Structure formats: C-alpha cells, structure tokens
Length: 178
Image (tube, rainbow, N blue to C red; front, side, top):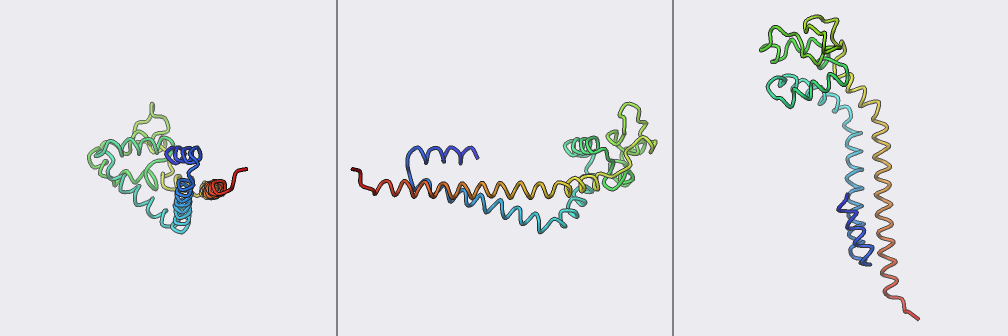
C-alpha cells in the first residue's frame, strides 16, 4: 500500500495521465482481489470448519516435536481458556502424551498455572479450542464481510478518481490558453 501511495503521489505531481491510468488499473486489480477473496470466503465458509478442525488435530499431534506449534497451542489455550481440540481428552490420544505418560495435559490447559497438578480434571478448562475459535470466527464473520465490502468501495473510489484526474489532465493539455 505504501508503494501504491507513493506511485499515486508521483502520478499526480508529475501530471502524467498514463501513470494515472496505470494507477487506476492497479486499484481495479486490488478491488478484484478483495472482492474475489470475500466471495471465496463466503462460498467456502463451511469448508473452513472442517479445515480448521483438521488443522487443529494435526498440529495437536505435532505438539512437543515443534517448539513453534507448542508455543502457539499454549497461547491459544491460555488466551481462549480452552483445552485440546474438542476437549481435554484429545491430549490423551496425542503423541505428546505418549512421551509424557505422567502428564495428562499441558500446563496451558490449567486455569491457574501456579496450582495445577496436571492430573486433576477440575483444575483445567473444560471446553475445547475448536468450538471456541469457531464461535469467534462466526461471530465476527459479518464484521469481516462488511469491512471487506467498504475496503473494496474505497478501491473503486480510487479507480474513479485516478481516471477522472487523468481525463482532466488530458483535457487541459489540449485546450488553448488565452
């Protein structure tokens, strides 16, 4: 966006109608991409649910083998106050539990990290992370759609203004001066 903004400033300061038409085309391409992304997201919103569940299950199996995934899962479980994909029992079938037989679930599942003995189920979050994340996404889906709509409208305004300015520059070049 900074590059497009710099090009826009350069185009208007040099009175180059060709560059303004190119800028209008760039704005129109960005408009098309935003619109295509919005439509694709709306059409495939049901596939998102399945893909999210599959991704969470796959990453849960990688917990303990990949420090980045481990940090992400700990952040998710702490932030959303959840444990596992569907519930805390998911950790019992994970690869992490096979190597940590004495632990039932990671410390990030605990309601209070200081006093969690990592075995007592009453000290952990009961709800799984998948329903929590899915609820957050579905609750904010309309806001995301509305935001992408307004962003695309601004892009159309940019196309219109760039073309109008280019036409005005072309017209001014061919008018006689008295």
